Length: 345
Image: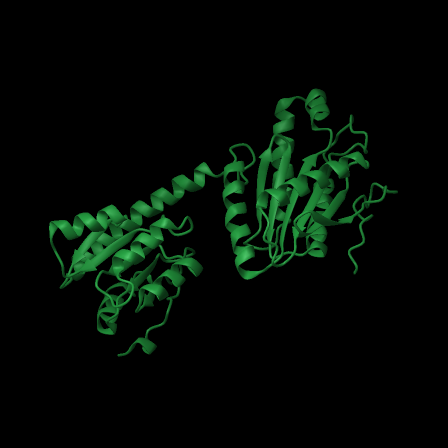
């Protein structure tokens, strides 16, 4: 048996709807990887790396649920790998278990200070390894659930502002790293204070829940994020999306909200709940701050409101200090209120 015979990942449990936990095994000795693969492959997805550099790349691009990390390796040793994982915001929550032949108090203390959660001594005992990994994966699953609950808006069920802020930073850095465009939508429920005054706060809460559900349903990719930005404002993060694509998404979301047919007798637009949307897009290779994109989306949102609401306005950041505007013209019919922006180029 050689490494080429071992698949990088395994399939899901037969008949199960959930993906199996993923374990990354890092060791410069292929025979050790093969031994650990035999122990875990029936229960977990198994990824493999024979160097510290490769392990860091895997954790960055395809984060595992747990890392089994050899300490003594040529080049970058296990201690440095662990330190780098814990120093990176995107990988710091991945639990690391050191696998080492050096079984002494000083070695364990140093590893725990670096952020490891456990030690496994060589030669390994399969039952002990299984038990310890099962324990750490259970703890991680519980921690992930708590983190997820802390990032969900209690009223609407979409991501909350904290989650939005975190994801914006992560996706902004990724867009800069791979030189991809990046789009942000900010939207506001039109005349929502009047809605609350007319129908009451319970009806207002129900309205926000329905609007949030419509927005969520209009995002077609797993990487897109819908969040409650604050009050009656929502935001959408659209990685790798250019201006025409972002405008198309905004048009779809606006139509989905109108399709809810929620009565709003005090709206100056029409007698239905509608949204105004501001779109901001950074060009591929833009190296400014994410705050500039938020500020531009906010500016475009207020432009949409100034120009009559129930519409989309968008601009593109091309380089710091410049932008390309797409103007929304007044709309003629409430049956197609967002059609005033041409998406052709």
